[in-house]
Every structure is written in structure tokens, then in C-alpha cells.
Length: 336
Image 1 (cartoon, rainbow, N blue to C red):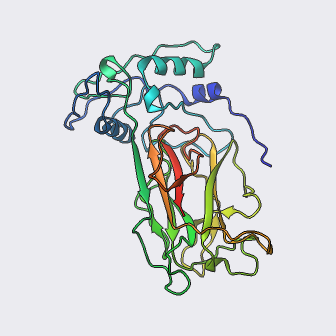
Image 2 (image 1 turned 90 degrees about the vertical axis):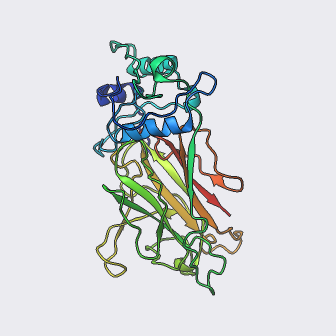
């Protein structure tokens, strides 16, 4: 079992500071359409707000969203950002949450609600900050992508393997034989660009241990995958029985010099340490275990509420990949 270290939200938030979270500045882009009290903050207004914060043009008064340039050191217990569902984001709730996270022993400086000038929404609620945002999500999946499974060994185009691609640049590419889902797993939280990659081909088995018994792992499809949150960095985090890490390739050439390492999906973003795991085929050396159902498609859903769900027929893994780091709520999804 993991030895978890409980995070102090109040202390971590104070350590992270309140700088750059109290106002909005102008930019030259065309203003978003105005919202009425009846309609609230529209999707286009919300996405424009998140984009301005990501670019460092504006700040989120709650501190949930930060610029992509923000990088948190990956050591010890990292600072935690406050996080709030869009449907709960009013100016009163922002004030209340900030007061709670600062704690009773820290002098509370009431933040000034942002005035949006030529913008319709700057992250507050009511007044110049706009209103309560509508729930918004983006779903990115493998459907219709890279349908190149072996006609003999994988005629149904199941997902044969998963990897993670990580870089300081959004242009990072998947390894040969893999396809990158264009959904940053650190969206809205700064940190590295991290992407889920999949393959429908028989690829390097990555040295998976204890997964496939006498059957070569590259001939078995992925049957489940998920993320787990840890409160401290774990070198060689135990994936549990019948699971292995979803690896990040680090070698200089494929396949002869390829090496792999465990990756933290909150790398550079702070918050909890997020490790990802998969399993394949039947249990090792167990004739009594049922045959597992192979996954046909994988996806990533991200949005401004923990209530977001993928389309019908999909399964959502309920671990927020941005856990503790603010930003969007982000979840892995799969389809049998």
C-alpha cells in the first residue's frame, strides 16, 4: 500500500502566494459576446478567459488557472491550488474558498473583484466579473484515428498499447507506431505538456512484467487503464497486481536504444503526483481467470467541472489528472 502524506491545503496555498491573482488586464483581441443574467457566462466567454490566463495576459482571481509558463519544482509536498466547479463559481464562493484556504491564523486580505473592461468575463462572478459560468468540456478520442491494426492479429483495431509523451513544447510527437491525442493533461495548470498516445499495432512490450504470462505482451490488447494520485513522489510507484506503468519513452532511437521511465502527469504543475497504469489480457498463469474485454478506443475529457462526462458508451476513470494543481478537471476515458 502507498504511504500517503496528508497535504495541508492552507499552508501550501500560502506558500504558493497570492501574486498575480487579483486583477485582469487589457488585450487587443475582440471582446467576447456579453452575457445576460439569464444566460450567465457562455462557453465562448469561458474558453476565452482560460486562454487569456494560459497566455499570461490575465489572472484568475481564484488562482485555479495559471499561465502555461508557471513551473513548480517537483520535490517534496508541492503547493496545492484551490479548485471549484464552474456551477459553483460565484464571487461570494470565491471569497469564501480563499478565506478558508488561507486559514484562521493568516491575515485575510479581501481580493478585489476584477473589472473586465472590454471583456465579458474575467473569472469572478457578478459585477465586473460576469456571472456563473456554464459547464463546458472538450472530448478528444482515438475514434477514427490510426486504424492500422494488423489484419491477422488485430483485425478489430483494438488498442494494443499506451504511452505518455512529455515536453516543454506542445509540438512533442508520439513515438513511431503511436498516435498522440491532442489533449494536454496539464491544461490550465502550467507545467509540462503531457499527452496520452496509443497504438493499434504490435509494438515494443516495454519490458512489462507479470502481465501476460507465456503470451508476448505485444500480442495482447489493453483491457483497462487508470490514473492514481499520490501526495509524494514515488520512484517506481507500485502499480499493484496485474498492472504496469504507462511509460514515457526517453531513448534516442527506436527500438534499439529506447528506454522508458515512470512519469508524473502533474510534472511542473504542482499538486499531487499523478501516476498512470494499464493492464492487458488475462491474468498471468491463471487458467481460471476470465478473459478480459479489450479496449477499442481511448479518450481524454477536460472541462471546468467535475460533473463532465464522455459520450454514451464510454467509461470515465474518476481520478482528476490535475488533482491539486488547479486548471481543468481532466479524466481518462475508454470504450469497449
